[in-house]
Length: 476
Image 1 (cartoon, helix red, strand yellow):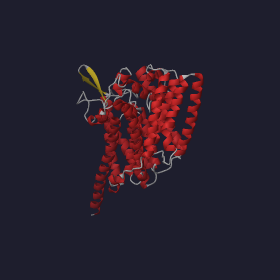
Image 2: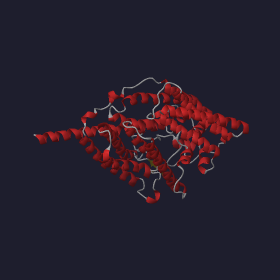
Image 3: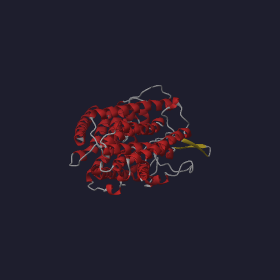
Image 4: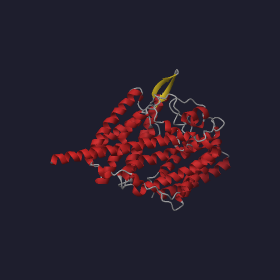
């Protein structure tokens, strides 16, 4: 099913690309060349997977990466070509329209190599051999572990809000960070451990849903009531801190975990997508109100996504290629290891290297001021920053190979062990987010999502043993 949809998407985009290129040639209008390149980029990432014997599933990193390409490359090409707004001027950073058309060809070649890497992978890791034994915990043990998780998550959320300025209803959904004075300047930390504490509620939610679907085939009213506090707590943090993507991820996570066990209707997917897009539009309006003083109550989420510079950014990737090494020296692989210092709080080490390249890219390449956030490079841009065009193309092939390796390893055993699905959901979303983030950022996110799952299983096993012991003593 997914392959047929992607195949139709390929045919449609190829037709659009050819027609727009011809029209651009006849009119000598660079705007049509830009959108033609946007369409051909989407074709490039699709061509090998959809026209070979490779099976493609909705539940794998590659499919989500295609969505990132649709947003960041194709939709952004239309914004660059035909839209008129402050955000468009910001992401273009003074470059002419034709620049993105010519440089975008390199992005198309890289995406072609990514698809080649995807179909080249025939290997599989037997991840089922490394999973804990789920038979060691009971329904009661999982509930008791969940109660502890919920208490810790709520406490972490309260502490996060207090340490980042408190809860001000006039500034809902604003960028939040811990401010630390250093040498007369303010250094911003992202309160990673408090964020991790809150996010355990979502990990618990996915484990519990998988458990219900595995044992009963449904969630049921009691399961819904038990799950609701975990969802509200986990979704509160990204909403209050203006992490728009994380709100959408929370909703997609429910769909992925539930859909692994039971077919989800198109109507349900549509409703969930509408809710996610509505939340994105509302949060974007709140963010702009806080940062720019705008009075809009809702912003079109499609335009907001395309203008954000996120996804597999056509504008960001091409500007990075133009700015390295002239405005930013080659990093020679060092950015792939900054995740090693992530566990050290910035309040302890004020000069800790940034895990993300975003701020450095924004200041050095874009020439813009970076305060709390920057311009993420994506895995392709990071490859270029480290090793030039070789790193740019090689990283595309490697990531495509990795996408298929993950799918081959997890999909055959997705419902055989509930821990597998609880881990797989954050893995596919985090890996596909390589379109927008650097490698070290993704490693930190993967560890932050995986560690709580294993801790939850361990806690559930302990509470289950105690529960069985209490029952045995009562019988005696």
